[in-house]
Length: 357
Ligand code: PMP
Image 1 (spheres, rainbow, N blue to C red):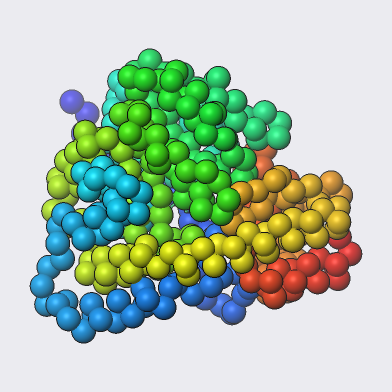
Image 2: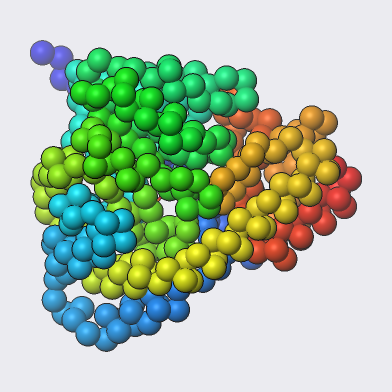
């Protein structure tokens, strides 16, 4: 048998595994940061207070490995049982568990051709074959094109980075066409006006709904995500989680997340502000000649018929405004702009007017 040299092995690894490239977290100067879909408002004061309290209490002790208090809070919020809830360090961790839990070398996964770029990374990492399903020229998703025999489907709703969304009936169509397969709906952006399919978990044991506290609850830095589904799916996630020794949420995250979910008033108030700013920004960008895909998320996906997206990205960055540019086929004419405060969006619009877009 030929012995593989370390350098050959290394070059094979680096060509076969293409890691995810996260949005920039710049350190060179202060930007108006509209590039990673964070919430511009602080987390609930009650969540901050709970985190402070937890920090003063039992950090000496390990956290609860089954995260019962948080799972019960989420279950109560949705009217489900704790056994239908899983929590993780951000929804990314839950997705990282879901791929090996539900898919494998002979259980293929389908997702849209333009979507969250972590999906192909997980598939490659775990040796799961995947097929990308074409979206139309406006990135619309056709539920009829999602049917798989052995494996499942994952899609964000609203989709990222396009903001295209399916109504509940569209998701139902996918669930019906894949009754014996696992369908994961990644609802990272659902709270900004979309309708969650979480209630459907009672009817569809093949549905896993994944959500996050990173966006609508302003807690990207705390790393908390949740999944809702039939207890069998939750058990599948637990098996993967418990195969890694130390992955659970820390005490600060558990305490902060419980308080954030319980503080419905604050959540609704900040979401209302983000939605109003998004709708106003959409109209203003259209007035400036941008094509803006209707969005129910906390970002907009925009293109300008006369301006290069890459150039706009660079000009905005020079002027202290960071948006997201994807140097990828089909979407390299677009920018994804997260919704900030009204003042931040006004600053963006001012710069765009100034550079005579
Ligand atoms: N899904 C989608 C579609 C996302 O855009 C993101 C954020 N980048 C995530 C999941 C992960 O979010 P988090 O790990 O912060 O919960």
